[in-house]
Each structure stands twice: as structure tokens, then as C-alpha cells.
Length: 289
Image 1: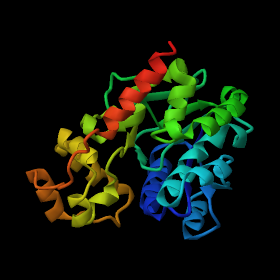
Image 2: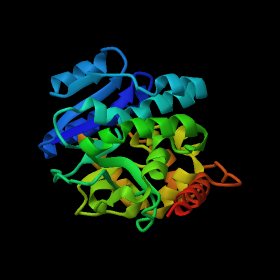
Image 3: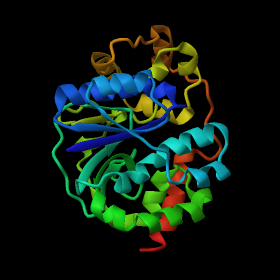
């Protein structure tokens, strides 16, 4: 089965995550890695090619729209995130493929899933299927290709509504067409240690964010909340990450202060993003069904 992941050349902070993901896929799965890259050949693409990864040099078909709406860091994030939307027109051979974000590691081989359009798990709340997470998607490429032009038009005319980039677009445009995916395929650290997990998703704070005390201290408030849900699980899975990227070194003093409740020092927003997202999705999706 083909595994797609994507990034752009400006997101260099993801390179350790990409290397860990690919290393785990090679060691633990039979997946065929395909990397969609918005950029020129560089040290990362050379490393990936040496590992047998197929590189697809591609800029998002939505980029002309995105650059009119976003600037700076927002454009960097958006231009990388929306690459996944083009998989149905990039992939021309297989009817089903796996897509993941770059911040995953594979713990076991992955069984092919065949959804009507795509299959995803919930994001934070295991029971909230309306707010599904597109960090792991089994895609029905054939059916998504049929709706590709309509989906792109929807994105074009609704960019201001897309709070979490293309993830919100998938939630709003396809709604209940998401096939429920077994949680083991998108296991989050804050859900606890699970021996049944197949794909581990470092959703929220990434392992690289624990390498510097200042980044721990200034961790986004919501990421701090997620960490406090299960510090033991974070410790276990951060150490597991080292097996696939041994170069990483965590800041012990910062972690101690995080476990003591001293860090992070960031304050909660008046209207937290997760609440805004849930209210927005419920209002816009439930109103249609």
C-alpha cells in the first residue's frame, strides 16, 4: 500500500519528524513511502531517496488562492497542509492509499482500509466523530478525484471559515461521509499507552518541542493541557521516538518543571481554539443534517 506524506521546504522543523516516520515505516511496515514536496532537491530529499522514498515535487494546486489570503507563517503552514488535497489527482494507479501527517511513527504494519471517500478517527475526544482528525486518512482516491473540483471550489470560496486549514474543509464539505476509523490507526499520546496502537500521532506538542527549556516554558496552552492528561504516556512515547531518531535530546530541567506544573507559563485564551472549532463544526455541520 502506498503511504503519502507531504511538506514544504520552509518547514525545516519537521525534518526530524519526517526521518523518524520514514525509519519506523521501513522497520515496521510494508508501506511504499511517497513524499509530496513543495521545494527543490536538498539534503532531506537526498536522505529520503537513499531510503527508497519516492519524491513527488509539487506545489499545491490551491497555492495561487492561498497566497492571496495568507502571508508569512500562515502561508507556510497552509501551503504545506493543502498538499494533501491534491493526492487524488497525483495518484493515478491505486484506488486506495494511506495519508499521514509527518508527525507519526508506525508501530506495526498497516492493514488496507477501503472507505467510500476517506476514513479518519476523532481528534481529541474519542467519541467526537464530527471533529475528526485528518492527520491519518485512508483515502478512496477514485471517489475523491470525482469530487476534487467541487472540493477545491468550496475551499476557494470558504477560506475564511477554514479554522484548521483543509481539515475543516474536509469536515464541512464531506461531513458524515467520513468512515469511522479504528482508533488504533491514529493513536494520540494523551490517550495513554496502548499496545494495540498501529500508528502513533504526535498530535499537539511535537518531540522536538521538548528539546529546549524555552519552548517547553512557552508551550501553547492547549498543548500543555493535552500533556497533563497523561504525562506517563508522553514520557513513554517520547522515549520511543528516540528509537527512530536517536539524535534527539530532551531538556530534563524543562520537563521536570512541566511535570511540576511550573511550565508552561502561557495563559489560556479567552475563547480557546478547541472550543471555537467544536462550536463552529457543530453549527455548520449539524445544521445540514
